[in-house]
Image (cartoon, rainbow, N blue to C red; front, side):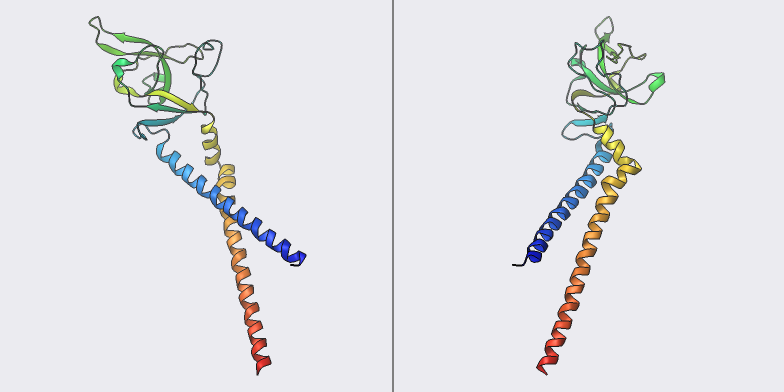
Length: 213
């Protein structure tokens, strides 16, 4: 086999591998985008009892005020909460996600730690005092049971930053447009090659017919 034929064979293999990688990345980005849009930051949507929220502030990030606690998360982290729990069993130290009724964050989804369970003199549950462990500042309004979305389960660092990048113009260009254009360009090259091969075979057949005649 000639050297140029070997080189061409290697190039064809590399091209196929590159194409497969581009397709895989493109499909992954599309699936990731659909899943995040459909599930993340949706109070009423759960997967097997779990809900997903992007942290919007550093109120639970590590500081000297909460260094002794096991759980810390930062703005941009993904918090996973479960709706499989009993409100009456919640206690101080549990972390819950709820719809804030505070004046400065009304209607926002907040994930804070329970500082105290508030009950009536007869023991009936009223609500929960919550706070951000970073500063220790209490939320100004009690969290009533009806506004609780879920109980903290786990977290994934930095997912929110990835989402923010993907939603930006540079992120769209890098993660969606560029792979798509590369894929289209590769297919266009394959079509051109097939067309040239077809024309070359036609010319060859015509020459052969001329010789036979």
